[in-house]
Length: 179
Image (cartoon, rainbow, N blue to C red; front, side, top):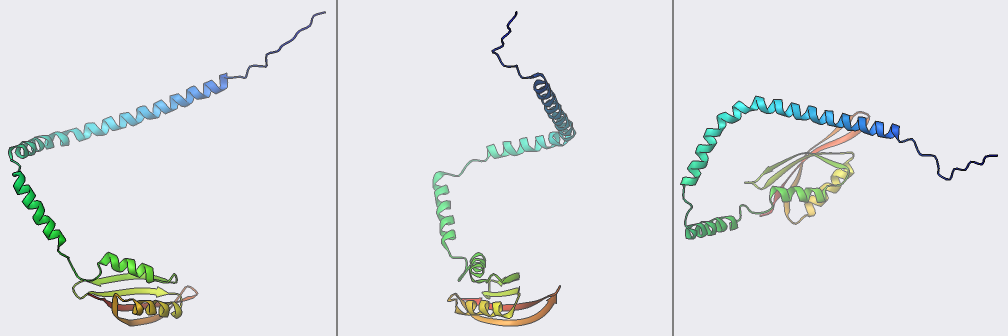
């Protein structure tokens, strides 16, 4: 009588996994080689244009090296002049970015802006918008009128328009930004 024992478990079959890994590596390397070949061909077609620009670039570099930098005192003087110019306020009242930020804060969810025109010299803003109902329009107008940085808020035009089974109110509002 013969007794056979096997305390070691069956070895998993690694051959299919190794085979798939090798094929994935070959596929990845072939894609990489194709990409490198494509870049080489494109670079060779661009090479004459690059070589044409090279003498001009070399001339510009040589010309820049010939020009001397201003003295440190002149540089400091120029920096102070630029700082003085930058400190001068460019305009009075709100900037266009500040006007847009203010409109974003005041605009109810039901109102959608379709156009904003800013005339900076007159400090006048023209809004074109639409809302689902007149209540949202009234709420927006009240917010604009109560804002301390805005003045002369006027509803210029209002139209009720029927759009695909819904009624929409389109309107135009003009106001001025206080100085």
